[in-house]
Length: 78
Image (cartoon, rainbow, N blue to C red; front, side, top):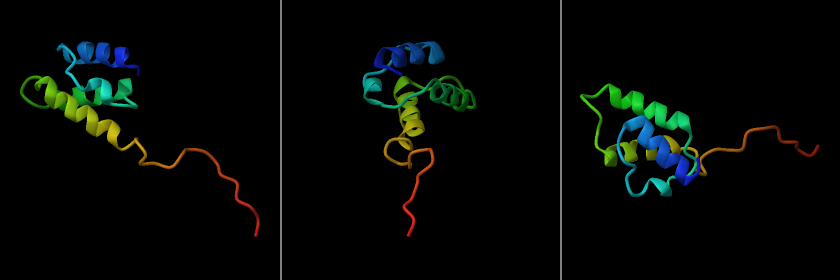
């Protein structure tokens, strides 16, 4: 998502203004917002925006440099 899309998604999913720092999160997807919203629904009420930002950060952290590319790799014959 672009920074604008992430801000709009935050406001729509959580009903709160997007916190400062949201724009620093890279590789956010709509699914990240949906997962965090489901996690937050298990608690008593919606957490503050700073907590939601941390949870979003945890969702996308594993994707940033942490995985091999998806696809097939050809290897030279020995």
